[in-house]
Length: 138
Image (cartoon, rainbow, N blue to C red; front, side):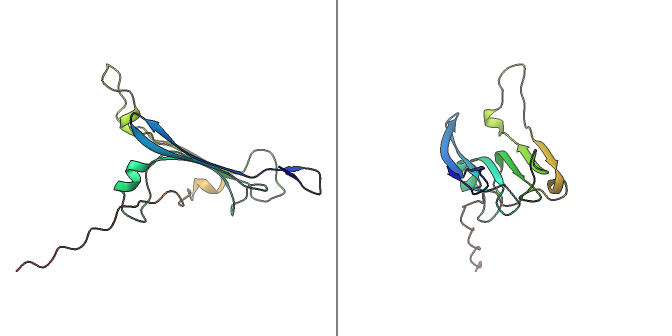
């Protein structure tokens, strides 16, 4: 932790780890910017399936279990950030099933500020190699 000239504390951090749910590996990452979170460096929390990342073509967005992003319009703002985005989309493999109660799929989104018209797009990208074109038939 460092202290700025104004006397306020400044914190920066990043947490990255893998978690396992029902034998499936998920990447969990949290990015806490050094200064007030603004659009160029927002606060982010993301959990996504590494299995899905490997199945998703390179460059395409990977489905996320949890995605939260927030930032202020200006670095001088305080209180709750004006721009917040929350998406919760757990895969069917971790939802209750096999009983009289089952959830087949679930997706919940919440957005304020700029995110109401433009949700974040810079999430995890797939790593699956492109399928080579079929050779010409003779």
